[in-house]
Length: 205
Image 1: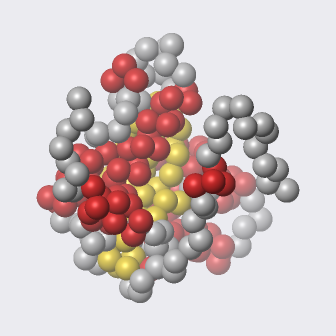
Image 2: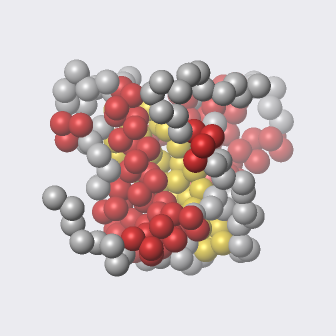
């Protein structure tokens, strides 16, 4: 049964088209209020989730814990490159201080029904984080997803207490942009849509 939400469709589509990535270093206070952050996380909860496993979670990193995260990022750098200079370690630590609101997205491969494939779990997490980003955009905040090799390090995994089947997917940064994000070219619908029987997809080379 089709619901009559046509009056809200233009606004929703406008928010989706308006979403842009703003680099964390360009996100400043104020960040979302507690109520606004709750709205963003509640939007994440509407993501499709096969068998309702809730195979993902967000870990909030308050300002009081940014130094600990910075130290973990510096140690992660040293795990990859024992010769990293003090300046490079300082740059790694500084990343933890960016953006007034910072969360980590974690996916659990083992939670619940083992017959639900890991790709479905990851897809659910992707839908959740996109819903969160769209809610933040609707509330007037900028956002960014950042990852990197450090998320796989023992230092970062230990800080967040991740189990063997848990993956730190990305950081989510929220805040007020210091400037309007640059527009980026979006792919045309024809670039990523095919009909069965049309033949092979066009080469990307």
